[in-house]
Amino acid sequence: MGPEPIISFQNVDKRFAFTKEKPQSVMEAFISLFSRRRQPKQPPESLWAVRGVSFDVLPGQCFGIVGRNGSGKSTILKLIARILRPNNGRIVINGRVSALLELGAGFHPDLTGRENIFLNAALLGFDEATTHDYYDRIVEFSELDEFIDMPVRHYSSGMYMRLGFSVAIHMQPDILIVDEILAVGDQAFQSKCIDAIMAMKDRGVTILIVSHNINLVRTLCTHVLWIDKGIPQAYGPVDEIAAEYAAHAFQTKGQPITATFTRSGTGEIEITSTRFLDAQGEPQETFATGEPMTIEIGYVAHKPVPNPEFGLAIFRQDGVQVNGPNTQLAGVDLGVIEGEGVLRYEIEQMPLLPATYLVTTAVHDSRSHQCYDFHQKAYSFHVRQGSSKELDGLLALSAQWRLHRILTPTHSS
Image 1 (tube, rainbow, N blue to C red):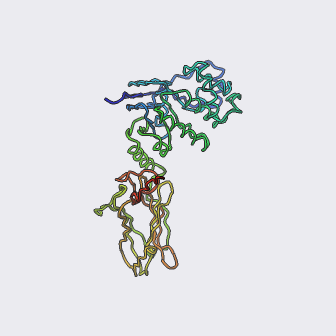
Image 2: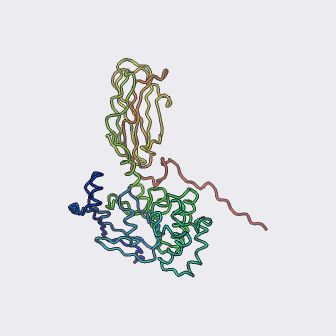
Image 3: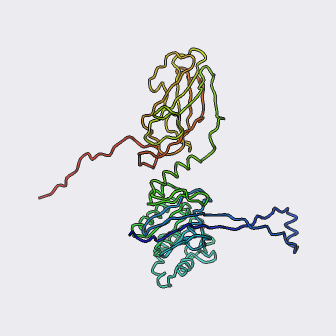
């Protein structure tokens, strides 16, 4: 049998009850301050923050939780930290938990940084002598020496984060919980925090991280839970889940593509269609990295046009342009075209990594660059993970690792 989980969620639900207040005018609000008249109570409504969540975290794992804002990530962390109790299901926590959940959590605003260190240590069960042993290291890591005797109500958000993170990592936790708060700090301190997390990971500390930075999750975590609207979407190894989540995030980001797009041109040649075809020549909307794909452009020339220039541009949905090929750059001479026709741009192996992509198609006069027809980001296709295991960046390059030579050590006599 394998090791026992240090954290186990078994079909956990968490519900919040709230009452919607009827809007009041300024006069009504003023009168209610001096009146004993009570508004009739509205029946409470329910918000299910998490529903049916199940996962296990093994000792020493670095576990990530990803999802959109309001998906239930922070609720799960608060359940682990025992700040909240579940309505249904079972939670098993084995070990001391140190949590960095939100700015100022666990700090008293009227106490100084020094006093808050000792207060937090006492809440975690450390005596004063033990806290003294850790105090200098906490202050040194936080880089708040000159501000440590200032009431924390005067701290900036970055200073809060520095002190909170330093306290959390120095309190000998078996489980360290870090929410998105880490993003508040400056770049240099973020790098310092990541190094500290990696060191704790090497020492066998179990770490839970909530972050919108999927590359950070890939770097630190071995397993990931993806949650949306309180409901688990996927749970498993980081490479597999991060790819699914990244593809979904690009697919749902921004406004949907519609038939209304920016179009311009003189109209001697019109683009009548743009389709994405698979290896069998069938129209598709989704392709896997490594698969063949053909972009087919249909056109009609209303009069004879000598050697027009057809082109396209592919953009990732966040606006990054992938490429911009055209027939002139490729050295393709189309001659004089007239009437209807079809032009195809054939990609032998799709190099793009999972995301949604937008395509602009256009046709110009190759000499004067006069535009005949221009469809700006009018078409879209999706890419899912294929045989390539690459996840970071934009492209899966067609390349191989090969050992060129082995340097043998020289031995002096």
